[in-house]
Length: 433
Ligand SMILES: NC(=O)c1ccc[n+]([C@@H]2O[C@H](COP(=O)([O-])OP(=O)(O)OC[C@H]3O[C@@H](n4cnc5c(N)ncnc54)[C@H](O)[C@@H]3O)[C@@H](O)[C@H]2O)c1
Ligand SMILES: N[C@@H](CCO)C(=O)O
Ligand code: NA
Image (cartoon, rainbow, N blue to C red; front, side):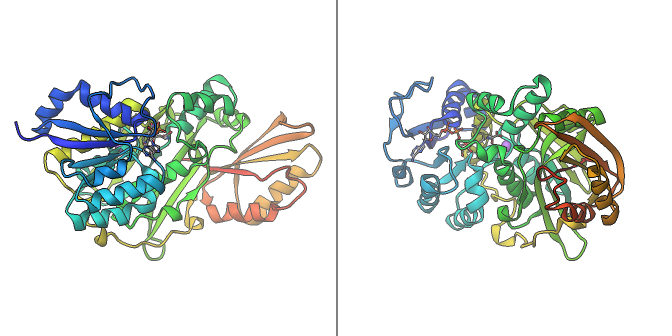
């Protein structure tokens, strides 16, 4: 068998210790499939004494991961520290500049600096791979950039954050509180170091921007993802949606808008999903990605989007590719060939929407809401008013619109803005077709 692929691991948390466990457990089959062994040459994390459930005594410990970039005996640096900038980015830049391949699970870093790192890797002639960064263990990057490579991708959308999906589906099944369920997701190792990235939709936006770049051959534009998280979703919304035949899921959607010149639409937002749609049965920390291509039709990728084992599986798959000598292009084509597409206007879009208001329980309120809808040209399909809401004297009013332009819904909400008939800003969720 050939020389081993020597790797250095930075970060030994949920993902890093999963990678050590996987490489140790499956060493033989990995060596056969990679046609050479994968050998851990050095490891580094903040705290050497911490019990991680893996025996690290046989690996060289580096107090400073920066050393990895300089060591001639290391072929690949595996970054599992996290954070868009700081030590992770410094390590990534130095590793590539030092001629090492880089494997990372860090979607925040790739979303912010992926184009720079890809260009640096191309110049240095080394691989940059990040399968674990999008939808954890699901090989969706490989699926899109290799399996679907012959297609023009028309749309890519799905459930991209395990923490939010775990929270929404657990709230749905148990009626438990948001905060209580979030604490569980953190305990299970699904949540980011800063869980606001999960619940505010930022983590899903990181992943969506990476997927969109690969799917459409577009320059990555994380800054242009329209992002709303799940913190505004009430137990009452979950119940209303259920009564109407839907569940609520945080969905990231990207597609090319051809209304004027080609533009890139990217949005993360809670959506209503019909109970018979494949995404409705995706629960817990499971992720699912749907990709629609002009020859392949609709593909559905589904699996564990977070957690040590599945994420490690994706990291080590990247290492096996590198061991086999497959460099590939980080975003499926050379970074300078990615097309610079402007962000699309969401008002061009059409569809049905759920709009929820919390209103004072007094005469005239419903009339004001329906008048605003009429004046903006929004046609209402159904309307639910539910008993007393959260606070005293307030009720929850939810409506579902007929198919129509999103710009009309925005106009209706603009008319209602600041009205004393609304106790708080309304929540709008699109309905997945
Ligand atoms: N947890 C998941 O399910 C999951 C899934 C996919 C991707 N990711 C990504 O993987 C990365 C790691 O996530 P995690 O959940 O394992 O995080 P974690 O907090 O469990 O582990 C981070 C590790 O990095 C080490 N570290 C922090 N600062 C360091 C520094 N300056 N130098 C050296 N080591 C340092 C910590 O000691 C720890 O070992 C993140 O980018 C995350 O977004 C996580
Ligand atoms: N925090 C992320 C981890 C996987 O990327 C999630 O909950 O999906
Ligand atoms: Na993946």
